[in-house]
Every structure is written in C-alpha cells, then in structure tokens.
Image (cartoon, rainbow, N blue to C red; front, side, top):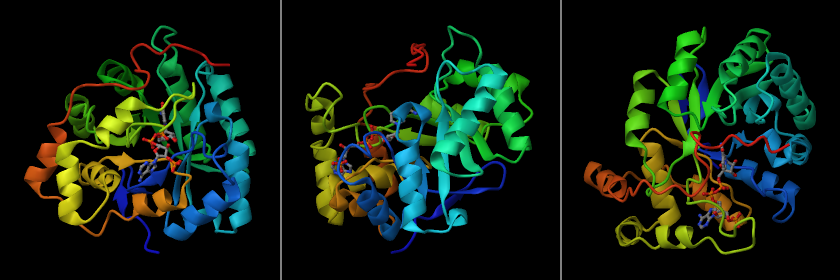
Length: 292
Ligand SMILES: NC(=O)c1ccc[n+]([C@@H]2O[C@H](COP(=O)([O-])OP(=O)(O)OC[C@H]3O[C@@H](n4cnc5c(N)ncnc54)[C@H](OP(=O)(O)O)[C@@H]3O)[C@@H](O)[C@H]2O)c1
C-alpha cells in the first residue's frame, strides 16, 4: 500500500501527513493484528503518550512486526505532573524503555497545566533531550497562544508541532493562524470527533451528529468516499496532521485512503464553516490535572 505523503517541519525533518492514534488501541481487539494491519496499510506515524498506559504494548507490537525502526515515526508525550527538568528527562527515558526504542521521533508536552507554571522548565528538558540525540523533534500539545508565547520567549528551539483537538466543529482558526506565523504545524486529536464509546460506556452523541452532517454527506456522495474520509481529507488539505485511532481493519484502511482525491477550495470552506467552537475534550487553558 502507498505510504501517507510527508510534510516538512520547521527544522527540515519530515513527518507523515496522517498517523495512528493510541487511546484504547490495545483495549479494542488484538493489538498485534491492529499494528500489523496499520503497517500493511501504510501507517508509519504512531502517536502515543505515557498517560495512555499502552506504550509497552504498542512498542512490542511494532517490534514484533519487524518493520525497520528507521521507517517508523514514533511520537509520545510527557505526562502532566512531570514538568520539572530532571523529572521530564527521566520520564522521557522511561517512555523510550517502555516503547523499546533508543530514540524518539517526537516528544510532546501533553498539557501546559498553566496553574502549575512549569511548562517552560519542561521545554528546557525537551531541548536538552533533543541535544542529547534522544529525541529528533520536540513539540507541544494543548498549548494555546499565551502558552506558546511563553515558550517562544525562552526557547532555543521552536516547537515543530502543537497537537490539539481539531475537527469540523472546532477549527481553532485564529490559533492555527498564529502557529503558522511561527512555523508550528497543527496535529489533530479527536480528528473524527473522538471515541465512538466514551470512557463511561455511553455512546458519544457529538460524534454521531458530526458524522451525519449534511454538508459532509453530500461531499461523501460526490467523491464516493465515507464521511470520515472527507473530514480527514479536509484536515490534511488544511495542513493539519490527523491521528485517527482505529482498531477496526475497515477503519484502518479507510482512514489512510484519503490521498487519491482533492476537495475544492469552496468545499474546504464549507467544512470549515461547520465550526461551532464546540470542544468535546479538555482544554489546555483549564486542564491542570496530574492524573498520576
Ligand atoms: N494530546 C491530547 O491531549 C490527546 C487527547 C485525546 C486524544 N489524543 C490522540 O488522538 C488520537 C485520536 O483521538 P481519539 O482516538 O480519541 O478519537 P478519533 O480518532 O476522533 O476517533 C476514534 C474513534 O472513531 C472510530 N473510527 C475510526 N475510524 C473511523 C471511520 N473511518 N469511521 C467511523 N468511525 C471511525 C474508532 O473506532 P474503531 O477503533 O472501532 O475503529 C474510534 O472509536 C488518540 O487515539 C490519541 O492518540 C491526544
């Protein structure tokens, strides 16, 4: 299967335009089968986080698959509550140990946790890890403009990525515009509106509404694609890297099969116009939880 095209980051490194999310990936079905199917389908970017508790399971499955390490783009995140310099460095090495790798392609600060005020110290740790050769690219997650400003004030290395909740109901255009000025690429979590079934076992009603939007239905019919594919194509054409999680083999294949058609400018705009500033998950402004 063809690989996803790549995008060049502000440091000249390349990253696949679409990746695989990790939340619940080991809980829904056979993780080895899921990873083998994803690699066969052309996925090379694998998102993770210490918080998800499945770095070991996914790292083992990647290793057992046998794909050469250098063909993969493995990304994980620093857990909240570990923003002190030494702690952040130790945590990164712990993630690498669990994943079974001797370097990471990307390491992100999971949340700024602004009440604790330590994310600039965490950034210094990420810069150190990069200089030591342990992490090839460093970036942010859930950082809003005020948090990014503080990072830009103190940084030697400009973040390459900021991973944020992004979907047609939450397009965060002003923040994306600000990031663009600084060469920071947006990566989308909840790119398809989040998990189908929530942590508490309830069906996610917002996702069902999103996946039946008439604008998207019409485009899906026009291009003979699914609504999920229309959303993922909109994201990639907007320069956003989506990381949809999929355990179903049909979804795995469907989600990466979005690079063989192109939405027109007015169609991209009609999807962007669905924005309602509607957030389904936690915001970087308010989330100060440590989750340990
Ligand atoms: N940085 C952060 O703070 C943060 C927060 C949340 C998530 N994330 C990352 O972002 C990733 C994506 O978010 P997410 O997994 O919560 O939500 P998502 O990718 O928007 O949606 C995943 C859900 O959609 C289903 N699905 C996948 N492909 C589909 C398709 N083509 N059609 C219909 N349904 C489809 C999946 O079902 P099946 O599994 O059954 O296929 C799963 O239930 C996470 O896995 C994680 O890596 C980061």
